[in-house]
Image 1 (cartoon, helix red, strand yellow):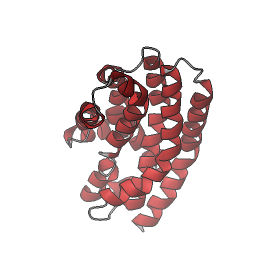
Image 2 (cartoon, rainbow, N blue to C red):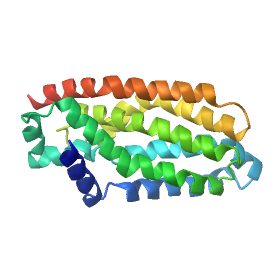
Image 3 (cartoon, rainbow, N blue to C red):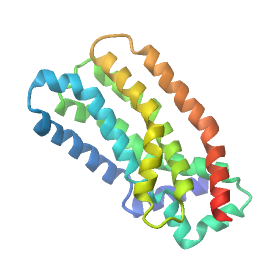
Image 4 (cartoon, rainbow, N blue to C red):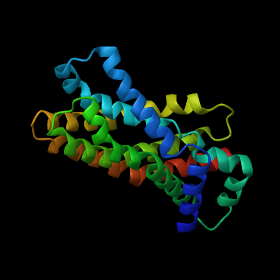
Amino acid sequence: MRALLIRDLRLALRAGGGFGLGLAFFLIVVVLVPFSVGPQAALLTRIAPGVLWLGALLACLLSLDRMLAVDWEDGALDLLATSPLPLEGVLAVKAVAHWITTGLPLVVAAPALGVLLNLAPGGYGVLVLSLALGTPALSMIGAFGAALTVGIKRGGLLLSLLVLPLYVPTLIFGAEAARRGAEGLDPSTPLLFLAGITAGVLACMPFAAGAVLRVNLR
């Protein structure tokens, strides 16, 4: 498992779909928002939690189509399917690699980008916590979508359309937790819901993704 994780991390960075692309997209979204809604500080403060969460979610989508595509193209996926490792474990490792190269950099960069949107001082800690709790679910759901669309030419758009509805609960509770933190309210309820969603996704989605991938590899 460790060797597979290291290999996937190297492939993600080598293929150009790692943290650099996600961070660049995240930065572009945050920079363009003031141009579209105006430079009013009060307005930016109010919409900052939702914009930051939406930007992080969309940034996670950028590299999902490469999660299994590289292994499919070079035949490594067939070898992994016949190896002693269960497909559920393989997909879980790939989701972890995706989170390390995409989700984790977004969590680290979110406070700095929050400054550009005039995020309220009380919202930084809750924003980071909500992203740390929610982005693993985004990566694992993305692994399910990648398993569902593997082998489809130009399946990136289809993958995005499939996983975006599944991202909605995470987006709702993550943005709500960050909003409550920014307004000085208690964010514990949305954070607990967010943690529950992530725990449920991590517990169930590898098995669903493994079953789908087995069907696609037949």
